[in-house]
Image 1 (cartoon, protein in one colour):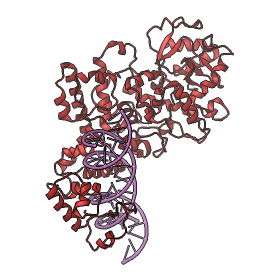
Image 2 (cartoon, rainbow, N blue to C red; image 1 turned 120 degrees about the horizontal axis):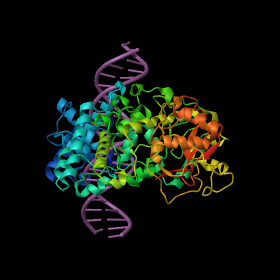
Image 3 (cartoon, rainbow, N blue to C red; image 1 turned 30 degrees about the vertical axis):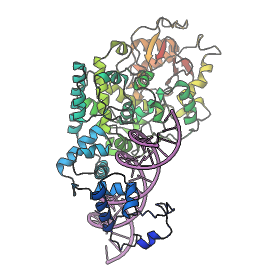
Length: 568
DNA sequence: AAATATGGCAACCGCTGCCTC
DNA sequence: CGAGGCAGCGGTTGCCATATT
């Protein structure tokens, strides 16, 4: 459809009009010339074509000056590029083109101009429009953005490429990257950056963190834990700002992702306690591990992707079909009075309890969906090939684990009883523990003996503790166990409803139970073993002061867990 | 047949990066 | 090195056509 209008179109300014006191596009005078807006007329087209024939493309601002056109340079360029330049292919996209667009988008994201370069005769605008309408259609249909085969193929290519890079260890991968057009996200994991000698060609760096995309792609639960990467103080500050006003309705409101974009992904990951690079779950092989994370609630249905379109869709208007396997009740009904439960410092928040939930989680600047997956896949793959110093310091967080983290949202329901804004429990977990810590220490410094109380739901690294940090309060457990913070946040070894998600290592379970004493300890153990489903009132977090894990027991009392600590 | 909703396209707007001075 | 100009890119908006009620 062309919006070219005839010169008689009353929206078109006559030459007389343009010669009159002039206004610019916005109605202001610009150098005595009225720059016209709106549809182009055939006469204008002719003028522009003639001008370009004579002077060539470029220098668009000169067009207006020299051709008599009353259009700004930008408008001229756009008109020429999208409609007038030779070799433009008109008409609907062919099936081949459509398939190519899908594949290209999977690789490039919203890089329309780059995609257009792969589609001779097509313009970025056309592709963009096509994609946007396609997104709408698929969203309406509840279909994943990318067909499975595209996801699979892209991932395969990614993995092959990555393996090749690692195996070769040379600089001969420019071709690979150039060939497949993959782009390494701007903020790449350090492992990849370290590989830049191996992967020297970084065609274009989307200004988006792969992690961010991944997080978004993984859905809100992931998004929700991202803030853990914030500097602790900032987290604390933000947490107050974020949640202090929320005595009531929970909404997905997360600190800006931008907050993390200055941090290296490794830093982010480590801050989370994430193994870095991430290790894939050895039990989940193949791309489906990423395209559809097994066990994932948000990711089921093949809609796992991390691009803006999807993030937007998932984030805000994900069709209900995209949660087909999700028992929404498991997310915790979003009671208006429900305080947001973030597992300690984590800002963990619920995914949309309904298909259309307002979310303020900012979308990272646009990028491709699958791109994030691919990047993550690379990262995961790198994990196997990278130094042990990182892996040794990390527990394995599998996609399934990550997906399971969704179950953290279960916690939300467990705080319902503490929704009173006046209660510390009505605040974020961070603020909760900010407030609770002094209480729990009976006046003693946290560096001193703090009444230690268990923590649930953290994956405990079985490696012995940092011997340099030996609080004397570790009477119940002689060793200090490091807990990957991200494990705690990611894994759902939280006290899920029905204890379905409790996977606490025995050592921690026992320690916690001991710390809790007979009654609570017994209750706790019953939960962790699944023999009791009475998890109401339990909560977990970390002490904002010293990063010690803490537990909230029914009744609202919070206690620090000695013998364990989060490691960043 | 009219009103409304939806789809599709063209164009505009704002931002960013590059280049020149 | 910083400012200004320019070109390009991506997001958004507006308009028209078509479909649906």
